[in-house]
Every structure is written in C-alpha cells, then in structure tokens.
Image (cartoon, rainbow, N blue to C red):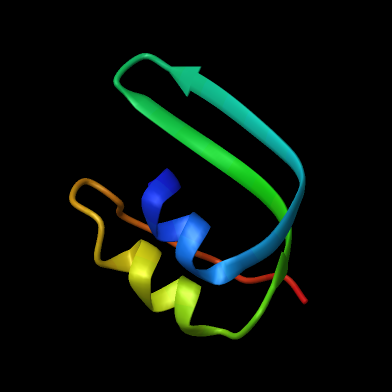
Amino acid sequence: MLPVLADHIENVIDIINKIHGDLAYNILDVQMENGHVIEAIRNIEHVTTVRLID
C-alpha cells in the first residue's frame, strides 16, 4: 500500500494498524493532493473496504 500512498499523499499525519486474527485494518490520517488515492487503494489486492471521512 505504501507505493500507492506515496504517489497521492502530501503528508501522513498518523497511522494506526490493528490485527484481529486473520483480519487487519489501517486508519490513516493524511493530507491528499486529490481523491484518486481512494480508488487506487481499493484496487490493491486483499483490500476489502475503503472509507473516506472528510
């Protein structure tokens, strides 16, 4: 996921990673150049859900 983020994000403010058994999630607080990063993250293998909180 980091190469995708590097192409679209100006600044990473905070990252939270949690694992629960076979499921993991990441919460990213970022400053984005544009909304294209959301679609790029959705296209990463094994990503099941992406939510934008504005």
